[in-house]
Length: 277
Figure 1 (cartoon, rainbow, N blue to C red):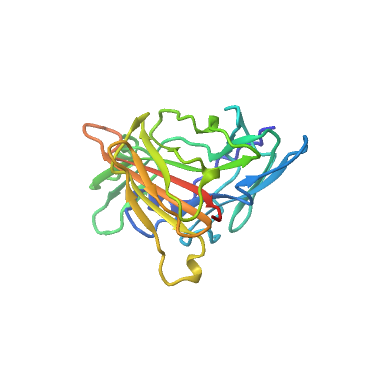
Figure 2: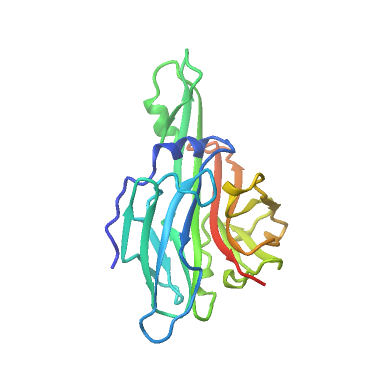
């Protein structure tokens, strides 16, 4: 049964990172306790997932809410967690896998507008969670340099029970999307993995991707794998070690003759696991 949605989802720290190009903006992720599970009979398997934002990969910092999680089942139907909880440093949700196949866990996705402007006598921008037209109507006299951003993000992961399938991969044709070519259940250390990026249903090049393995607190270098999508929207990379990874994809686009925003920023955060050879 769908849990009741709580609409105070976006924390104030996210507004600044959405508009800013700062490299210190928080990553976000859904991190299940298992990516590949097996079960016999009808009992299935319970999966517990952390939903968090932080500056270090998989280190709890902000409780990026789990109350709006959606689950795409192996049949392509939409379902919701059985329970969710928001704590001080992370959020958690539970879901029971009953049907064999691959599930997509995702944050509910919708585009959002953010704007900023300056006022005389202050170097610090004034930010709002509205489009340019709405923000302009609220600006004080003498305010200037109004800028607006249309922001769209996906936070997702894939979990497989028993035999994998691909129904949950189906794209929606909305904004930036990641389409697994290598099935997430088949990603193995020291073996090349391939993903494709689509923008409004079409392959898109020059999407910037960073892939980081867990454990950044315990090594001196981030060791990020950085690539860009090619003309077919494809990326290839080789996970160097078994473990859990966070993929962060970014695609930016200037918006011409748009009264609501000057630019569009798309982001995808995908967690996955590389298995042992």
